Image (cartoon, rainbow, N blue to C red; front, side, top):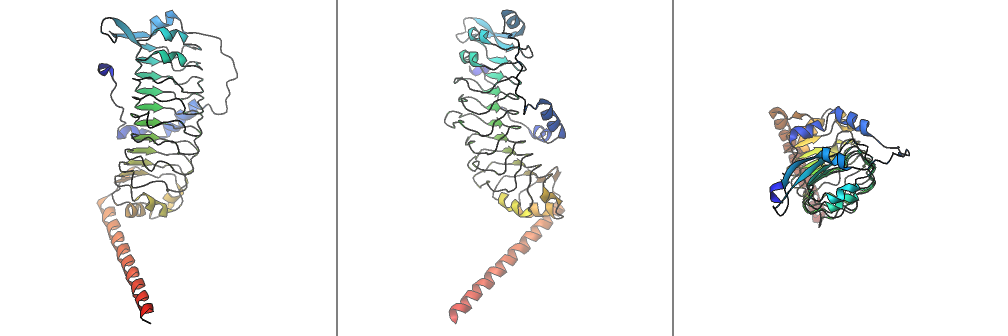
Length: 342
């Protein structure tokens, strides 16, 4: 399978900035399904051989190298309600069944060579599948999924569950998801960040949920990108010096009021870019200065890089604070000595 393996997905900084655009919110509203129950019954429309002939492409050698088979299938926007026919197409590696009316993906359990799966915009209530040994990219965005159980593919690198109805993350076993580096959970109903104990994780997208704090992420030492935009976070507790790779943190549109909260980010050794737009604390006059005083290695705040003048001023303030603290400590020490000598 090595010749067919997909390259790791690593979003570049331009992609991350696009996540900040207002168009992101508009796109999300277009897909929003919250409150809808889909009571209408779709007419049964199973996948047919004719549809398969139209959707199949990419002729490749089979696993034993003695025969050829089409390994790519695209049957999106076909109003499908049943893909039972796929059970017999065991050589498929790339499958797109998005924008249909599917409620059951169990026929995919027979596709043990599957590398890439897109099942966005269906009526799925679960992403549960048997362990697929080669699956590397899976997308179940904009369904009605309520949990994260039954996802245990050892080579899975990128998992997209945005736009569903997930309240809590459960069942993501780090012993099984040993390759997962990108997890997309934007636009769900998450109330907690607990359950995301995935040591290999590099990119975590949790925007547009109902989170009030960050918890359970302290040991994600490989995490480089964390998106928490448009939640209800008031405190910046939950970050630790063990998060040694975190470079980009987006907290736009939350409820951080006090600039003093920024001190809780100073132990993040590689934090270079911080987004805090649309938080109450950004209305303070010394907002940018305080951020740089507290986080010395920060290179960019919101959309703007720090100028050399700002950095020099922050250094001076930091030095004055240090001297004041030393003087206070010395005064306190002398005071104790006087008390002891009496």
